[in-house]
Image 1: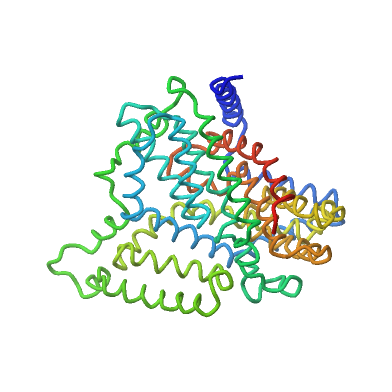
Image 2 (image 1 turned 135 degrees about the horizontal axis):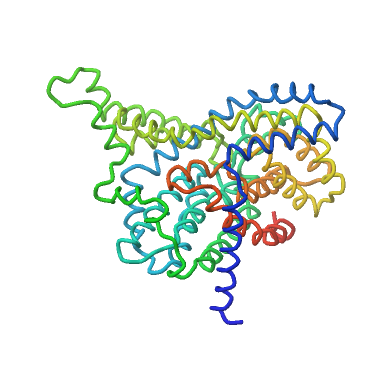
Amino acid sequence: MSANGSQGSLQRIGQAVANWSERWVPSPFLFAIILTLIAYVTAIVLTPDGPFQNVLNWYEGFWVLLEFAMQMVLILVTGYAVADSRQVSGLLNRIASIPNNGSQAAALVAAVAMGAGYFHWGVGLIVGAIFAVFVARAGLERGMKFHYPLLCACGYTSQVIWHVGPSTSAGLLSATEGHPFEDIIGVVPLSESVFTVYAFGLALLVFLTVVPLMYLLAPEEGHAIGIDEYAPELLDEGADERTTADERAATDGGTETGRMPADRLDDSRLVAYLVGTGMLVYVVQHFATAGIGEALDLNVFNFTFIALGLFLYGTPMAYMGAIRSATESAAGIILQFPFYAGILGIIENSGLSELMAGFLLDIATPTTFPVLAWILGGIMNFFVPSGGGEWGIIGGIVGETAVELGVAPGKAIIAYGTGDMWTNMFQPFWAIPLLGITKVRARDILGYTLIVMIVLTPVFAVGLYFLPY
């Protein structure tokens, strides 16, 4: 079969799966409710806890992740602010005109999204969404129609690489002193998890698989549905007229005449740079003392990005405007995180997590353990779509099994995290911010991302088994 024939077959498969997804995939919030019911019924059937006790289990879990939820919201909104800054969005807008056809456009969006997502999942998610819009709009301005749902799906591929990068929530949590499993695996610095040949190799395999795949999935222009049909309102936000969050916020202080001293402080670059410098002084000292691989955790990560945002926006008011705009993208997380925490409560308090983990891990050997931990992480991600939240449930079991088998805890963290990011391609929770930015529905993109998940299955299995640690 010729290359064109292979691409045509992939295009037909992609369209068929996309059509199925559009018909059957529910909204992200309904997805969470359905998974809650599945976990509830499963716990009743497989554990001693009855219907009433599992309601109690659900409520007990509902609020247990509030601190972690706040950390995740901060990662998202500070990453959003950086991605939406004039400097970053301007760069993205300049390179959006590079593609000359739909295949090139899809490959470029996937490459940019995954490149950003590797370093920061929140930045990658927002950069991927914004860049998909920019590329679709730039193509239309030059008389080309790129398939918009596929571009948005390409933007979401940032979430299939992030957990082997430095913003790994399980890795950062395990690198933080006092984490829940310190007595089992100790404090595991990033130099023993994501900054290893094992993790770098997996990231490279993802990139080299997904970019060509998205290139091949792009339909011919005659079958493409452009941004003008899906989200015509986004065409009003041209690059020259686009009001970025920092510019919007800068107008909130009023005119220069008659401004109050408080207004001047709000718009003071001196205040922003002074605070940002103080924060960076701590960050530099912190890393100089322990090294980036040893000292990076969730709190330091967020602290660094807040400082970066202050420098990018230049004034407290401008940065506050950026965070205010970014907060809307976190609305789904704020509402749905407690529901997924409730699922966590059912799974953990009923003993269902031990059953699920034991079923896979009891048959593990030192060589097969990474693959089994990957599968476990992938299954758990459907019910608790939070890398750190899942790790909070099964981290002790995975860590203890790894120690007993003589597997390095850092390798176990990467194997588990690979499963978590693998099924992100069919778990719509983290797509919520992207959906809000691109104005598409989950069902519009999940058909394509499901293909990504399927294609990556043998890639991950081989990589986890054979790559050196």
